Amino acid sequence: MSERILILEEDISLREVLVEVLEEEGFEVRAIGQIRQIFGNPQETPDLLLAGTRALGPQGWKSLAALKKAHPSLRVVLLASCHPRAARVPESLPPPDGCLHKPFELSELQRMVRRVLRRGRAAEACDRLLGRFLSGSKELTRQVVRVRMRELESDRDRLYLRYLAEVRSGTLQAGPALELWDRLEDLECLRQRALATEPVDLEGLRAGYRFVADLVLAKGRAAPLPPTVPREPGRVPRKVFADLYGRLKRGEISADQLKEAPRLRMRGPGEKEGSAGEQALCRALWGPGD
Image (cartoon, rainbow, N blue to C red; front, side, top):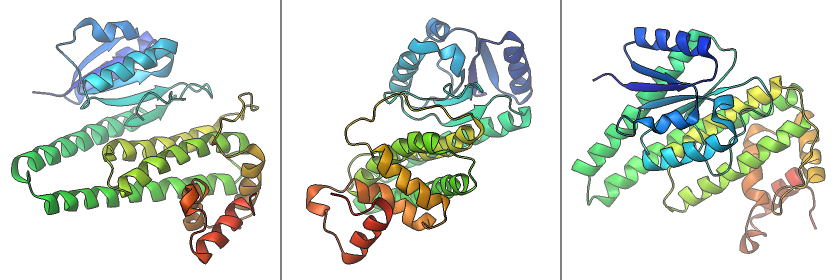
């Protein structure tokens, strides 16, 4: 049976083009224009949802989060408007599996759809095999987790390299860079939990790194917006981040050092001392502190 794709998009012309292109690829495609129509036939949950951010609307994010919770295997790719605020995903929604920024090439869409569905099939197959043949084997389970952690580290490396390159080139301004830094710290919190062997959705975490990497490019293209929202407690202060941003732009911090910055800043009370090397790196990244 062919895989099912649901398109949520306000633009009728774009919907028709996407349906035609994806049906030629052999998929079973349905297109709608409003978020409420997703729940019209709950028995036919799609394998992939292509969701326009404007069509989602303010309440659509909640509906989408509920749909993902009810159907964990559902893959979601955002079709983000060129508006600079359009691709912002609320904290309550797991990161999407991909993001395309309008206008995009149809070949780019085809590659994204194939990649996301292929990744979903591989993850499901791995889980099935693990459940059937590896149940009760803690060592084999640990091996599978180690493989997934290596894959996650590869996505993480690419994100930090892209972030650093965009800052150094001057494409990513300080305001958007700070907004993205909050997301980096959220991802690092989840990664630290995974390293501590807490239950973490590693595929979802990998998708988060890929999504933020897409946002780095998108924020670099968009006009920077002035900060209007006060910083939340626990987030890096604007002035402290401005110092870090300046050192990044001047080339004083390497990608390997940058990857350690979220962890070092968020260390718990019992970890504040650390080794002499860690203390020196923390000062180089974040200053002397209090």
